[in-house]
Image (cartoon, rainbow, N blue to C red; front, side, top):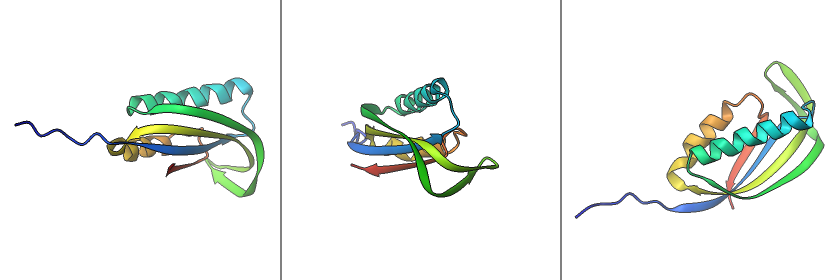
Length: 105
């Protein structure tokens, strides 16, 4: 008798911030990199919503730069439960992503 690993999939909401100084092409490239990272970890994007450029509630210092505004992107993702931690670790290492939040939908 084979014991199969549990492959439960949950729906998550991912919101991440990109620098407001990015051009439209740079924002699209960064979004494509995040999408590729999601696919690498066996996730599936069910919806993507760009909230555009907004002022931040407080200044964020990242990569020796202080940000006062950012481009917001919100995605709904179906992820295997066992892959979310590895995905978040890699997303945290992306220099173009200022901040991110991944929560269970």
